[in-house]
Each structure stands twice: as C-alpha cells, then as structure tokens.
Image 1 (tube, chains in turn purple, red):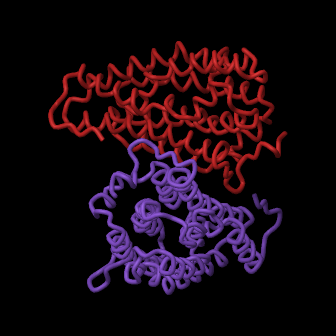
Image 2 (cartoon, chains in turn cyan, yellow; image 1 turned 120 degrees about the vertical axis):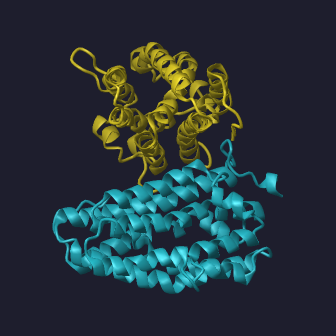
Length: 248
Length: 248
C-alpha cells in the first residue's frame, strides 16, 4: 500500500496514480492473456461476457450515485454524459446495448444475461461494492475510482485485435462496444484526472484518491479471479451459476 | 432457483429453507473438506482464519443494521444479544476476541488481522454485500439471511474434531469460538426461524426469505471459492493479499 507522508504536487499525484495502473490494472491478469490470446473456448468467453455484463449494467447506477451528491451543476452536466454513453438516448444505442450485441453474438439469450441469474455471486459482490463505494465516498475520492479508464484504451485495442484474430465465433460488429470506448474512455479519464489533481489538496485527500484507485483495481481483478477459478482452473462453478454445457 | 407459485404453510416454508441448507450450505465446499480433513498447510489455515475474521468482524455491524430498522422493542432486545455475543461486554470477551485467540494461535499479528489489509478483496466484497443486504431489505427478509445458523452446529462439531485431530499447530483452547457457537447458534437460529415462519405471510415475502437464504449461502460459498483459488488451486494470490511465505 502506498502511504503518503507529505503532500504531492499535482504531477506527482498523477505519477503515483499511473504507477498503480502499471502494477495493478487487470490487463496483467492471466485471464486476459488467455482471452486475448485465443486460448479460451466459446463457453469460457460466454462466461466472461455474461459476468462482465453485470459490471457494464452497474456503471450508470454508479455514475448516478456520484451525480446525486455533486452540488456543482457544471460538473453534473459533464458527468451526465457518462450515463447517456451507457444507457443511450434517442439516436444513441448506448454501451449496454452494444454489450448485449456481443452477448447475442456469443449465443446467449438476452433475458438470461439481463437477469444476472447465471452470474457468479463474486462478480455481483465486487460490482456492487464499486457502486456503494462511489455512493459513500466524498466526490474527489469517488471520481478517482473511475481512473482505471486511463488504462483502458490499451486493453481495448489488444482485445479487438486479439479476439478478431483468434476466435472464429467473434465477428467484427460484435466488438463495437470496445471500439466506441477507444474515444470515450480517454475523454472521461482525462477529465477525471484533471479533477482529481485540482481537488485532492490535502494528504488525506490524496491518500483517499490513491486508495480509491487501488480499490477499483481490486474490483476489476477480483472479477477475473472469480472467472478464472470457476471456468479455467480449478474449474469449480459455484452452485446456480452459468455452466457452458447447459447452453451448448 | 426456487420459484413459488402458491403460499406455503409455515412448515412447508421451513422445509424449503432447510432444503436450501442441504444443497447450498458451505459445509459442501471442497475447501472445508480440506480444512477439516487436515489437508491444509499452516499457511493455508492462516489464510482461512485471516479472511474469515472479516466475516466475524462484520456480524455486529450487520446485526446493528437490522436493529436500526426494527420498531418492536422486544425484538430489538432479543437481537441485541447477538451484538454482545460477538463484541463482548464486561465479563464476556465475545466471539471476535475468541476468533483473535485463534489467529494468535496460528501466529498472525493481531494488528495485521484487524487491519484486514491482507484479506482477499473478494472476501471483503462478499462480507460487505451481506451487511448491505441486511441494511436494505425488509426485516423478515433480513432475518432470513441469518438462517445459515441452522446449519452451523454440524460444521462446527466437524471442525473442532477434525482440526484438533489433524493439525499439530491447533490447540484445544484456540477453538473456543466454535465451542461457544454450539450453544449460541441454535438459540439464534430457532428464534429467527420462528420469526420468519410467523412473519412471511404472502408469496412475495416467502419468496423474499427463500432468496435471502440463497443469497447468504452465496456469500459464504464465495468466500471459500476465493480462498481455494488464491491458496489451493490455481493458487493465484491477488496483488496485495496475504502470502504465507511472507509470514513464515
């Protein structure tokens, strides 16, 4: 754990946050190496998409929880774009719909995906911990927990290339979610990073934003740990969760 | 998932709840077979005790969350005993202290255990999901989530015998926690079961109490899944979590 003993400059704070990404972001998790390297079966990719849906579906609730405690109308207006990006609006289908295009393409029934019935309990616990964290922490700390988006474009690029190349059951059009995030994530991350650098002005606040990013890395890592344990090794699917063989 | 289509009698409801225990309680998890059968190393037992501490430590907060929404003084008085059982009071050391006697006996520093710093993030996510569930659900549903205690005495007996017999690093006195729960758990569980049978009077309420017990079984199961994955197989300890070799 990074323990601060003095106030950091804004640029030092940014460096500390980027270092966390290099060491703890889930692009380092063995499950992603398998996923992007074409080492997973259709059933394993289904399990990933089905569980990751829970995370996607929680994002607008997380962002709404943050907006619910911001008194600055300008900041609320900026942040509301994130809800629209995920839920859609008029001509914009939104990221959750694009995720469902992916699960459709993998042959999973929409009702089943949306019900979260087959999701690993560990997935839901981790995702909801994130929603609660944002709801309960002060704004600058809550904003910092979104900064994993700083590290997302690299993994999305790797995923698009790796999945198209390595799986015959993946078509280009089902990867629209990731392609769209290549533009959205940097815009959001740059804004959030700037906000955190300008508003974390005490040692306690800076410690809070550092811990928040570590927490969020744990939320992402724990989801892949659970997928790995259930569907790769030792392959123990908990009672009630999705079993690829039941959907083959 | 058990989906009710008609109202159950109180005894039918009890039977449905007991059936969930037979199928989903964590005594069935492979990690417990290893633990009780003497198949784990000291480091693996340490990891279990350290993570399970997070669960123990959350119980009084969970019970306080329940009390915080009960308007019936009689019920609050009964339920307050649970907080005392765990936190202690005057001459009574309490269950959390008894758990720390166990982690002491396993050679773990108290500060480290209490800090939860080495706990698996998945443990904390699961445990806090339980606290939130009890805080957010209606009283009869929240009470039902405690009914895993119906199934606890059998596992505690098995654990006392199995651990004493199979591990030379386990002394009788460090198992005081489990011995004490042999009396406390049935008293609590009988009271809660009676409450649920008398207050779940619609199909929706009965469905709620059934789902609550399934949820709680998932909370317990997910904790063992995470321990198994990190410390048994594949043995991938997430970044920052307890590593036995660092404490040997």
